[in-house]
Length: 236
Picture 1: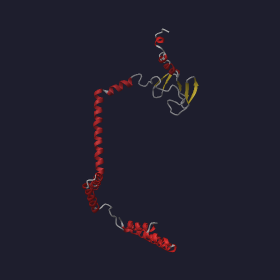
Picture 2: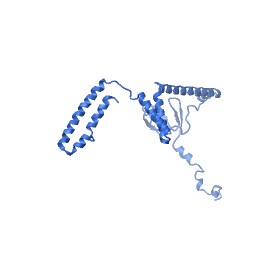
Picture 3: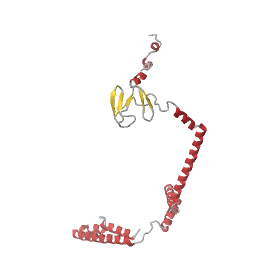
Picture 4: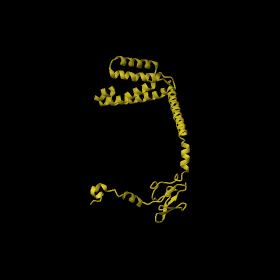
């Protein structure tokens, strides 16, 4: 511990309510006032001296070789004690000692080795995927899909059946100009949700209506759980 830090400890002790001098002077109010005033003045002087010393005292390492030797001795004693808990603590102390004994920048070097290993694995798996794609002719399949007429065509119910904002200009409002027909407020393009339309990027949205969903639900066997066998066979 630095000299300036030790002086601060003394100053803190002088100001503490548990100071023995204050405790002994509690029986007499006059004595207590004199002692308290003296301790405050002494604490102020010591704190001022600590500040001045901190500006000129040399920096010292908290971890010294002597302290490391002491820590190693404690770890050895814990390990030889036979107590399971102390033996675990000895392992922790050994790890700490190994950390201090490691050369400078060892952590950064280990991290760099880990990053290099990850990059190697990425390259390995990326090369494997490229080879598999070439073997499976994925690029040819993608080209065929892009040439397909349905490549930029939405499936039924995949696109919204109706909306109040423009499909080509997100956030732009649509104005209703007819039954299921809307017009963009920006470029005045018309969107007919009954017959369908084509977006600016070439995607085709098929026509549809919310009523179509009801037709899907109205299946002839949708309520067969409530029917009897004879009813389904037409015998009733």
